[in-house]
Length: 224
Figure 1: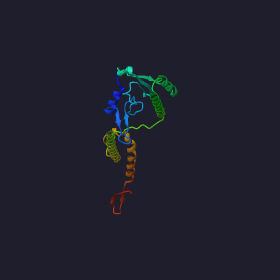
Figure 2: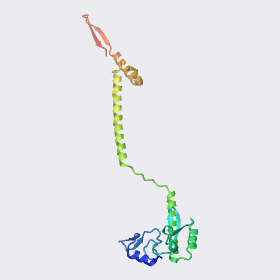
Figure 3: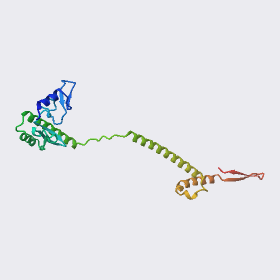
Figure 4: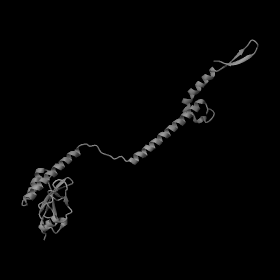
């Protein structure tokens, strides 16, 4: 049969994996067991050293009343009897009072306090979920650098293509390709035609004029 006093002596004087001591302040000892009703390491609050124990825990937004009795000590997997509590706070308090009628006042009071804290926590959680918050997204540094390199290369290639196109248009305007590849110059007719018109005007202005002198000599000059 389980002896609670022996278990507490071993835990208090020896080692317990749930025990956590603080070095700052008063140096209190806390309990990390999820079934601890107060979170403190003492005789009344220890869930391991008490055969009859009750607490309230929260899982997936639902509060559960967990009860442990000495009759379940021989089955560790079924040691805790879990009862889901009502969403309504007042009904949940009545439910705790009804199930812990003949239990110690300490456990009943601490279970109610724990239920109050859990209810407040769930209310704040639901309120925060309704609010719109900016989503923080991480920016991968490698991907950013890779995209920057691609962008710079594309910019250089675009400048090169523009310079080549400009040079070809200058040559087309100058008449370099008049006798070559004329069938591929259809899309540049709008750019070539004004250049040809200007060249014809210049050619018309530069006409030769024959001048006959008194001695019978004839000279040719360009008309201005």
